[in-house]
Structures are given as C-alpha cells and as structure tokens.
Length: 387
Image 1 (cartoon, rainbow, N blue to C red):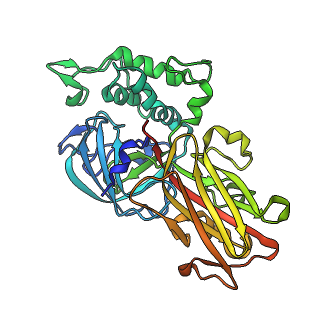
Image 2 (tube, one colour):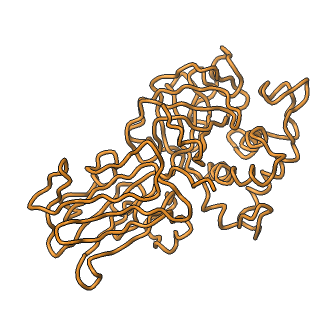
Image 3 (tube, rainbow, N blue to C red):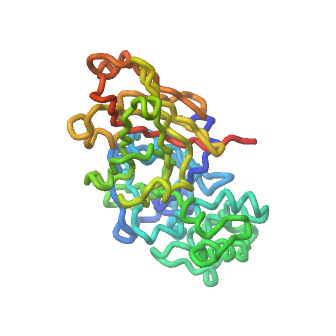
C-alpha cells in the first residue's frame, strides 16, 4: 500500500483503458474496440510486466490508481497515484475492481509531449487559479491528445462521461479548458505565463508518462511516472547503449581536492540524449551528491536543495565501470546499498568502510587504486517540503 508521504508528491497518472478498463465511463460491459495500434510509440519497462491495478474515482484527480506487484525499476513504484483518463468515449470500472497482469511501458513518442507538459504544470495551474478543478484538467487532457481527436466545440453531454455532467449540463468550464490548452500549446513562443511560469520552465516541468497495456483482446491504459534522479557523471547511459538516461560519477579523492568532491543530483532528465552537460540541466537539479574520504571511511551524502525531499536513495560503487559496472549500474533495484525509510528525508549519508574486498552486507567496499571510485547514485524525489 502507498505510504502517506505520497500526498505531497507532484506525480500524475494517465489512463487509456484497461481490462474492462476500456475508457472513462463507469461500470460498463461494452466491448473493446480500440487497441495499442492507436497509441503512439511506447517502450516496455523492465520489472513492470506483471502488474496489478485497482482503480477508484478520485476527488482531486479523475481517478486514484493503486499499483502492486511492480518490481524495482527506473520509472514507477507500487502505491497510489493520481489518475487521468485518455479514452473519454469508452467505459472503465472505477469502483475498486483489481485488474491483473498488466504491462507498463514508457511513453516516448513526441505526440505525448503536450500531455507531459500539462501534467508538469498542473499543480501550478490549480494553485494559481481557484476556478480550475480536476474536471478542467481532465477535459484539457482529452483536448490535447490527437489519438483520436477530441473536439471541445462539438462534444455533447450525451457523448461525454456522466461524471462530467450535472442536471443535463457540463459541470466544467469550457473557457478554462481552452485557456489551459492554449497555455500548453503556446508554451514554446510565449515568453511568460500568467502563473509565473516561463516558456522554458514548461519543458523542464514535463512529467514522464508510463503506459499500462492489457492483453491483446482488451484496450490499453496509460500512467505518468515517478520523479527519479541520478548523480551527474562522466559516463552517460545513453552512450553505453543501455537506452536509459542517467550517469556514473567518477571521482578521484586526493589531497588536491581535500579528499572530497561533489556533483549535482538531476531529476527527470529523460530528454538527455547523451550530449547534455550538467549546466544544460541545471533547472532539474534537486540536490548534491557529496563524497569524502577520511582514512578508511568513505562517506557518500545525498543532500537535497530547493526544498525538495527524497523518498529513496540507491547506491552502487566500484573501481571499474567496464568490469564491475556496465548494465548493472542502470538497475537501481539491484544496487547493493539502499535507503528507503517510511518518511521523506532531505539528507542521508552512506558510510562505507574501505577494506581488502567487497562485503556489502557489512557496508565494506574494496579499496580502489589511486582512490578513484565509480559511483552510480540514484533516488526518487518524494515532493517538496510544505511551508
């Protein structure tokens, strides 16, 4: 079950369909007509290919989505998330029925970008405009997608899910929906936004979207993912053919740097194609990884900045990327050192004793020649501190 701490997460979910999870209306036995062929390109998420999902109606979002049986991966964890609907014209069971054996994928196609932007700025929109509710956000999602088209001017109360209608009238504001869609679509040319967001920040706040696929006889479901972060480093996963984003930080601790070094922790940098510098991604920094050596003790500290709080920290360390690292460094669930407390945290230090060999159970690592260490530092952003 999801921990209470997720209340302050700014992570969202989308839904395209499901087992009888076939759209956005409630409790229907209508047959499935759509298939994954109508959905833009997605890539399977390793460790999330046999997932169970419970869907309920939401109050601050269209759905609440409770995931279980997800194995460790870079994109989504077990627990409860905000949920949103994509296929407005198909029904969905949202009264707590558990859907089993679902597959999750990552939505990488550029056709998802408008929805990624909207989910990224959703909290800003809601905080700065009291007239916007989850209903306007949901209808804006339908209006922004193009698979298939949703025409706000032509839709009738008979065509839309019953939750969007009260006493025979729409219970959302078309004007507010149009404003939201205009802001998202115009973000590349508009220099500033009414709520203080810049055009540049729209891209930076984009949320990655995970897609939930069902079997071939049923429709598909989608979901945006957790906000993971990596410590920036010299070795880029995009360049080592793993296809994932992230880095391995290489540091040499010696007298010249007072046996200490640092590198930024960067969240949501899936757009990195292997050519970005840390400075290119500066607006995605969520803290620092600080490394120090004191005789035989190596300290590796995750330190949050900007009010961010962390949910998890995962650490791999070795003396050679080629011999010890490689693909192993891109799978945080397999890292030897983990910190996954019940509460969010702003700082945590892994204290490792340096010895003659690796003994991870006793927090001991082998000494590296010339004090050169290869570090893969991964974590999950849990949200921001509430002031």
